[in-house]
Image 1 (cartoon, rainbow, N blue to C red):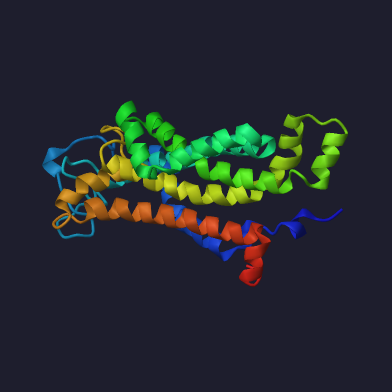
Image 2 (image 1 turned 90 degrees about the vertical axis):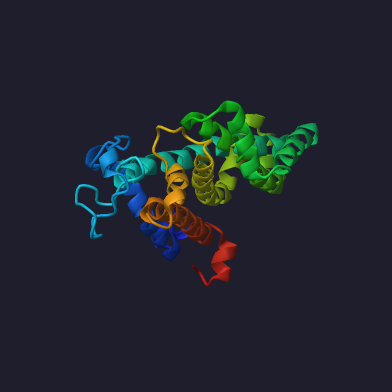
Length: 290
């Protein structure tokens, strides 16, 4: 039997994936250890220590390694807890939006006809609105909140998965192995789940790795505008919004959480790029084998 490793090279051999994982080290460590090693309560207010610069500055103190914000809250602690929010939103939105989009795409491609027309016209309606504008409208209706934010981003992110899944299903539904499954009496559900869906997964995995970056950036943008996770929840986007007022004199308030957003989005995109190179033979050929 052919070794699966020879058929599908490990994504961890890709330099792009390794570089992406390196970029994600700090955000992931922050998220995993926030409850255990964060030096302060992220919402604790100390007005006498407001706008304290980072510890390496002359006016800094070791009590606040990355300084404090306009209310005296510890920037490092807020960044660590904010990492939990950003990564939770990124992964959950991809899982929820991906599950909905894959279901729609598979049903649309397999049944065709009126089902396909209905789902694709619905997708066209969603594509008619810019991603952020549609998310803003949904959040304006639902109001701030973590799970409301996840719902809004998931609702606006299903279309790419649906289109990719539909295209793949259309390409393989007349293949011999599908016809054979029908001939031996396989149900539509069994054929879709057992025989067709696995043949779409490589493309969908690549798409999902890219969409994590979009979800993280979307959460930051909505929180920046005040329609994100809520005022009492630490978020990189809300930290950016608060820090922009003091950007010229207290650079660390916006710059440090901004760097974490850049690292997270860049890392996710690099992982997506490397995964595509490994799983898609066309890209391996173009890049000389990855």
